[in-house]
Image 1 (cartoon, each protein chain N blue to C red):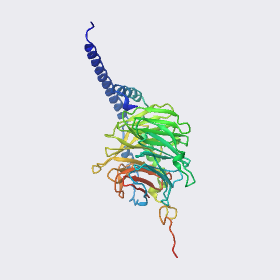
Image 2: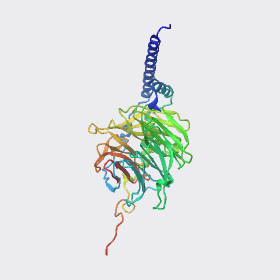
Image 3: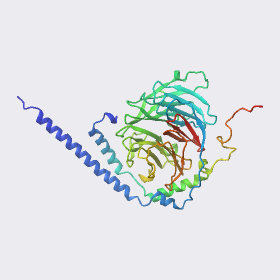
Length: 361
Length: 70
């Protein structure tokens, strides 16, 4: 009779543990080497270089419009390229298209699921994409006929194995980039629903993504619950750069207008700026008095201001170059969940768990 | 999908990624930060949220429409 399998299993388990330990050690060594390489280029701080830049004056930014109509928490919003229309999605399962100048609702769609966590406007302005707990991203063409049932024309494009956290059209209405709780990002063809490229590298839920400004090429950045922000090559599917300096989930990432840097906002109550050419974090926007997580970030047109929405219901406005806070905006009666500056930079919109959206200028 | 991967597979994935990243080209901060500052200074005069927009051009100032009752 053969001797029992137990000793063999024990050996196998020891080998597995050794391999895990070995992998971990190698990983730690490489991480240290990476830190060393990055530190060599840390010859100056951004705010030092910006010392001779004029300070910013007083800001008077107020709520100019309040968009009421959602029955529950607003989770996401996006601007149309026409600089006046907005699409928003909510926990109540509704996706609404608004005219921000008049506050009129132009379209409304009821999704089959609640928690519609992501929505995006198509570059043409003729369609919107949305999704959430249904694990899908669907595209709805917007009809000029107010009586037409938009839900009937719905097109399911993306399928993930967990919730959809963010979506964005690329330069055209034909491709959509998605991120999901399943830890991956993916690029899809809208017409056929075909998966064009998938992006693996995050070790936990991916919560946000942003495409590089079109002039700077085919890359995008994603942030996740693994505290990492990854920069990806859209064509090859490879992760080109990775940053792990946040201390908690990264809820929002946004490219700098020049395309050479990006900002992130995290549950660790800080926003950070990462320079892609220097391959390192170059600024942290934080204060001891700010202890609530950042849900969303966006830049003003020139990149001088960083607007950040927080879970303590406020919006903090940061001087990107000097690293100081220039303004704090009050108004929402619950968490700010989403924030985007309009395409022409004249205003920005925030969505909140208080069921409303506000336009600030 | 990350959720379905074992710890070992996740570590291996991280390791492969780190090996690639160690050899990326990087440039010193001084040059990059200076470029960023120049970029901002060029665009600053045209940033509506900093410089403001004249009231007659601002769609959000003034009435959003209403009716005049005579």
